[in-house]
Amino acid sequence: MDNIDPEALPQSLLVRIASALERISPTPAGTPNLSGADAFVWQPVQGNLAPVKNVNRVDIDLLRGIEAQCETLIANTVQFAKGFGANNALLWGARGTGKSSLVKAVHGKINSDNDGTLVLVEIHREDITTLPALLDILRGTPRRVILFCDDLSFDEDDASYKSLKAVLEGGIEGRPENVIFYATSNRRHLMPRDMIENERSSAINPAEAIEEKVSLSDRFGLWLGFHNLDQDTYFEIIESYAKHFDLDADKKQLRARALEWSMGRGARSGRVAWQFIQDMAGRQGKKLD
Image 1: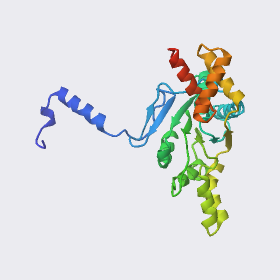
Image 2: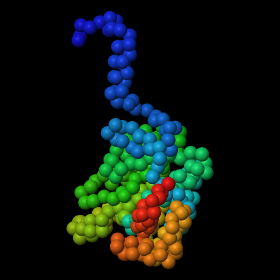
Image 3: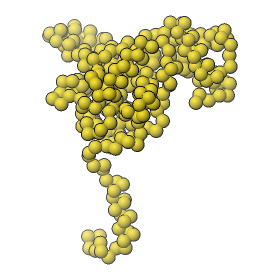
Image 4: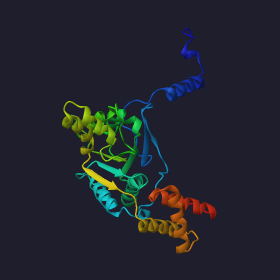
């Protein structure tokens, strides 16, 4: 192979070889092109952002029982979209209460009102250690970016939270001006309670040990709490979904079946309500478009 003269090869073969090498070669570092979509998923192994054509989200008008949280997050995101001061946000609380749904719905609403102003980039919890590399990439893009991590939490002996602390506010560069960080978690301080208690009981200086563990959540200027629904709000969500998707059921029957469904799952939440509506639509031969 070393003795082959490239000039002796057919031009068409040289073109095919060049194309093949281009496909397998790593993407060069630089400013990414975020014009092709409004949502992306960070793929750290490849070092690129995979576009998401259709974001899995619920219309913001269908989110009930979290109106105060919705209003606050919209206001913060609008400020960011306009280039004004805005805070990183931590949405914490019970499972299935609409935390991640709200982030995606707010992004969708603001983009529909302002013609694709914001990009939503999701980073998975296990990829947090690659966050500095991602921010270096996003720093160069002209679009404004909501960086989103769903179900963020840290367990004992997991030191990756220190990287996140430095990136959010403590590093020399800090987060880029065109990036804001939104995270959801079941834990208010992102750490399990027993982990914090163990630090308190075993550390030489308990106060300093606890401060080190819980200070990560302090890097989020905006905290939004989410809690399990009361029964009336749960019924309101069910009825709103049923009306929106034109499902057949009178109010009394709908509430009885929805209550039975929630009792079978031991919880009342937006997620449980959505699962009930999915089942009901399926039984009626309807799609939830």
